[in-house]
Image 1 (cartoon, one colour):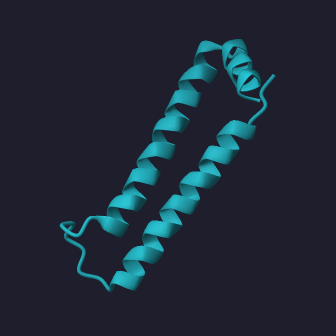
Image 2 (cartoon, rainbow, N blue to C red):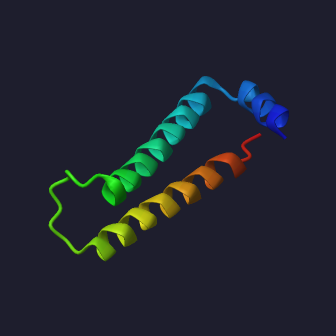
Length: 76
């Protein structure tokens, strides 16, 4: 499966590779932001911890959905 993904990346044009890298970057941004909101106490959020965890989980789930859409995109 991993070999198939790398073969698919090599077949992409320069524009498609740039969009792939951009998609991976935003996946990582949303993932790290969700983890920061959940676990970093020095952030200046004065909201209930339950809502902080809920928002963090929501961002992590959204990053997972973005990642799955990025992996499953089949542009031939």
